[in-house]
Image (cartoon, rainbow, N blue to C red):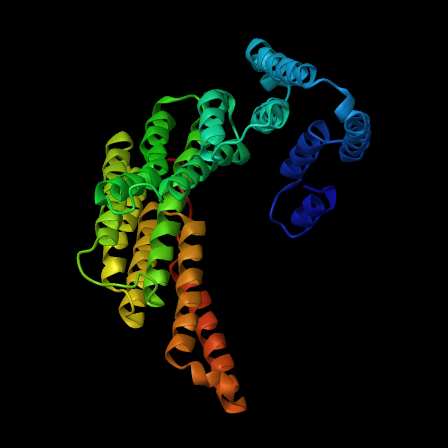
Amino acid sequence: MSARKIALWHEAGVIDAATRDRLLAYEADHARPLALWAVWGIGALAIGLGFVSVVAANWEDIPGLVRLCVHLALIAGLLALLFLREGRLAAKSPWAVEALAFITVALGLTFFGHLGQVYQTSSPLWQPLAVWLALFAPMLLLTGRSWPTALAVVGGAVWTAWEYASAMSSYGSGDGAWHAWLAFVIALPVLFAPVAAALRVRGNRPDFWRRVEELPLAYAVAGASLATVIASIGEYGTSGLTREFFNMLISGGVAVIAAVAVVFARPGTSGRMAGAIIGGAGLVLPLAYGADELTVPAAFLFFALWAGIAAAALVAHWRGVFQLAVGVIALRLIILSFELAADLLTSGFGLILSGLMILGVAWVAVRVSKRFVPDAEPDA
């Protein structure tokens, strides 16, 4: 916050002189020397790039076993530093702990590629990803405090699940049970939500666990939204109670189970609404398959999902989520109008009408967002 803005607030009568002085004193005590940090960062980057250049220039001359030992020693050293000094580092700068953790997990992930290069081996990508996740996710969960750490854990789980499903989908191609298992694996990352919800109430880092809980929720909503879009363009191919329908039913069932667990783990209003959103996304999955090649029903299923999210946001007082839901519904409405009248774009008059329609939808979205947006978000 700049001193100029604080002075403007005082001149406008928003704050009194005493508050202005306290704000200025606080900002002076907590000022961040960004220029100095930038110089240190540039220097550290230059040194790092220099080391990388030296190693790269002599890469073939370094024995593979030596390279692997150095790689492992770096990982072990950083792990030891984190577990022995994590408390002191976090007291001085939590971001230092985050940076060290990210460097460690990055070295751990690249180690598998390094190992394959030295010994000329190859394997499906999901295998090193799964080993990396099993080895390093506990450390991230024990030390994490920020969005990037939460994203590394949940995103790594999603990446591993989809890589596994992609690699293994060719096996047992005629076996419905095998594909049901793959659908179950794809849905497994949603189960991070109830675990994080429980630790959010009982743990000592509620902000971090809130982030870990929100990412599986976003994964479930994104999957359900994508399912309705695929149904709208008719990409499922067949209708009726086929193997794909049961696969989506299984994935949706996992989401519903996760939703119930979230409600039990965090029984307040916020927990109930988070569970309702995850459960609604799970219910949409099999319904989307039933709306295959039906543009309007698939679109209305999308609207129902996001209207439910907006309603949950109103109850839980999530301002950002409510505004996002209104914006997504408006965008999908515009896309639907073009799907139903694609020839609007073939004439000048049609372009004028489509432009006016877009402006109208945007105006209504803004009015709805301002009229019904919650006043404040609660702490829990």
